Amino acid sequence: MAAPSVANATDLRTDFALLIGGELVGSERSLDVINPATATVFARCPAASQAQLDRAVTSARGASGAWSRLSFEERAAAIKRMAGVLRANQDALAELLTREQGKPVSQSRDEIGRAASQSEGMAAIAIPVEKLMEDAERRIELHYRPLGVVGIITPWNAPINLAAGPLVSALYTGNTVILKPSPYTPLCTLKLGELLRDVFPPGVINIVAGGDDLGQWMTEHPGIDKISFTGSVATGKQVMASAAGTLKRVTLELGGNDAAIVLDDVDPKAVAPRLFFAAFVNSGQVCMAIKRIYAHERIYAALCEALVEEARKARIGDGLDPQTQYGPIQNRMQYERVRGILEDTKRSGARILAGGELPDRPGYFFPPTIVADVDENSRLVREEQFGPIVPVLKFSDIDDVIRRANDTRYGLAGSVWSHDPERGAAIAARLEVGTAWVNQHRATSATVPFGGAKESGIGRTYSVLGLKENMEPQVISVLKQPM
Image (cartoon, rainbow, N blue to C red; front, side):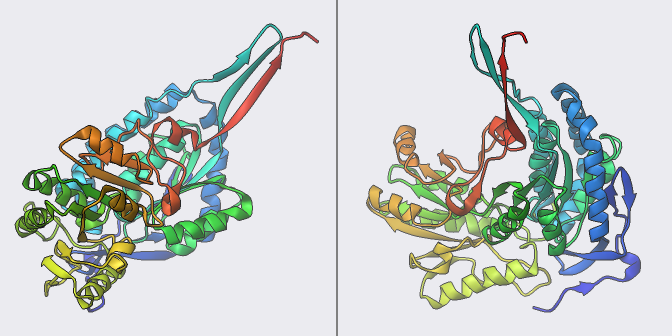
């Protein structure tokens, strides 16, 4: 595939700025941003220098004291105003999000709306003082206080929603923030900073764009007290190692290789559309998307046929086209990686039931691809493909399929599909994952913790558990004896 072309300089969007200390600023360095539907550079934004990061950290630390002394209710009010800003600018942000990320514009609108509602939901969660014991002589309480400055590093697959979760968690619990979006999708996040400039006091939110060097500067920076990172397992390990130098707290929401176990009592035609969407939404670029489908031998052929029918109906194209259901892979590196998995799969002798032929057109388009008769030790089964290619594997024994589903270094999520929900729940409880769904997949909520087991992450996001990840437990022990 040819390298991305660059639009005429007069056509490039350049109306983007960093947010540091309440001011919108440029930089001597810049990032080119590619529209994955055209493989063309369509925008350019500033890339922060190390000195600018230092200024952002200084600003965040300066704003920390006053922000942390506000009540939860006062901070929640600001977050609710942020949610209103998201909704008021939903259309403009959705178009920009689609241009830089590739997903259908309807899904971009949904992402921004979800970010708003999830933000409101988290800002309504109470974090009370916990009384551990009290008698005539002593009272012992458990308080939670802010960590200070939280650095947030977000990925390119859902840049607004995956920024809103850790952002609101940090802000609501009294921290100030340095937010760095992916260099592949920095634009919506920078625009969000521009929109939020008057919602929060100067320095409470700082947004800096840049490449991998900026991420490393953040993880090593002694003025940042915690790193919240969402992304790949490999990069998450680097983040953790880098943060260890200053013993930063870390929350890592990493990749997954989610298995869906489909039992013999389901109607294949009824379940296929839901499985297909959970596997291929955002062209498979979702950490908790279905990555492997295990189907009971009694329904295996029928389910394969029903999934193929869904693939035939799928409309692939530019996300700005309202008819598009599945857009391109977001960037060339990921496109080449998924294409490599496809070529390995073809060479192995597996059957390509649908898709598998890449269109000859500009952009990183890859049709939904369904594979049967694939070896359990293949890359497609063992790795997180993070793209629109999914294997369907056959099983006959429940204990065996649970073993196969758990035979992975990942442990983000999984699901079981059955006509009998209680039968499904008993099997789901045996999956070694952070979240196990029954007759659903990708169902999350602001009040429900989310995170991974094994190498799929450390800590939790959302819910009171996720909020407390941004706070330090503090014991207050009071001896009632007067002195």
